[in-house]
Image (cartoon, rainbow, N blue to C red; front, side, top):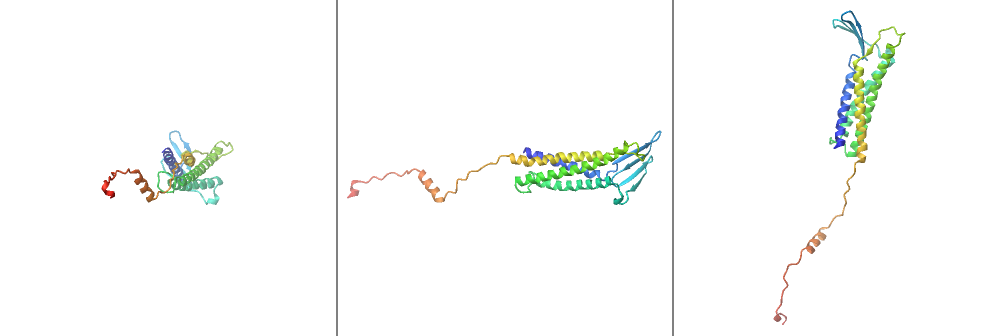
Length: 228
């Protein structure tokens, strides 16, 4: 029962983490920068993995998509590949997790389901590491440019998408680790043994029943004339 509850908690954690990681891809604010006036914010610059935009004080946004993928910076290409890999791995991990859980009726025996659950945990851990690496690589580029005194272009700060990606990656890694422990719990669980006494024939059973019933017939007494 405890193992089943742990698997349900792990599945909820991993699915929540996968949803957060998936929502990070279309999120706009991977990095953000503002230009403040005397009273209001005059302009807000923000960018993600696909485009860079500027929003003025009236709320009108002007966006520009990135050029050809081959002309992009290497870190943006790496972040794209890692995030797409994280989403795909999370999808397959969710399928294996459903099959490997003990509360489902697919997947075979308990030992087979434990192995499938462990595989799902490894997939989710790999998905979380991909997302964690992508967000950390992007954040490292932002911070290195921000604290570089020789960098004269527009400086950005960390956006909300990075924190969402880190949170989702952490949930995937935690839930995947719980899934991996399910195979260890299955090995430590005791197995019940049943003794086989062999098949008993019908004739031997009838003989035992007849021998166990006492003979209640009254003895016959013969007269002396019966022997004549």
